Image (cartoon, rainbow, N blue to C red):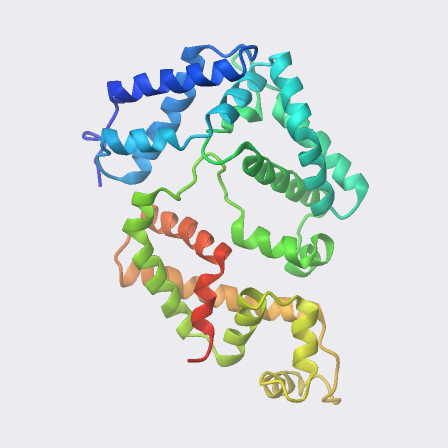
Length: 334
């Protein structure tokens, strides 16, 4: 790991020249966004430094060049123009992304009124009403060009929707969130929502360094689960069954989980055919998630001797593994 004294601070000259080339190509496509070269450079310099800091080692000019070539450069120019309040940039954003934003809000929100509230909130955040040191702060200033602007907007919508529910309810349980937002959306929320849209830890060098520890630790965590817990995760994540579908499976007398459920419910219910509710499945899943997380963290800290900042990186990486669902295949009987 680089110490503060040895940390890279200078960006290679060839990278500075490449930024100019990227900027010039973008301005040819959109000459009226009012973004200066220095403004564009400042944004990319911040992104580059975060990329360097997350790598924990000296990063070569070739790696930085490859990184810059993957930036969504035109989206970044648009975001900077909107952050600066340029009318042409805002017109372009409205034309190309307004309907996408509205569709996303309607898809995720429970009611049309909530969807409208989310859209209004997002636009307020994007324009910026908060003033710091005499300057308006736009949410667009947090977009780094790493990933498409629409992918970034999805996360902004998610945060606004969650804030909306938090404002309406002091505390939201898993069952309430599932009921209000829907199972598919809730599953995506717990699995994929990044805590910081500015810092995505999916760089190749980070993955190569920490993925072995992530995979071995999650496999260890899965191995500690009981049979019914493994089946729950397998049904929900690998087989993509909905909560109500899992509940109906468990109600089937031939289900491998039926005997376990009857033992758990015997002290409360006399009828062995009692209905299994979706909220019950969600509570079982919640307990399984908690057990997996505890073992996962213990393995990272104990077996792999990782420091807390490295554990935080692994927590980000495991979200990618959960999102593509491949890790849950190991739960299948061999």
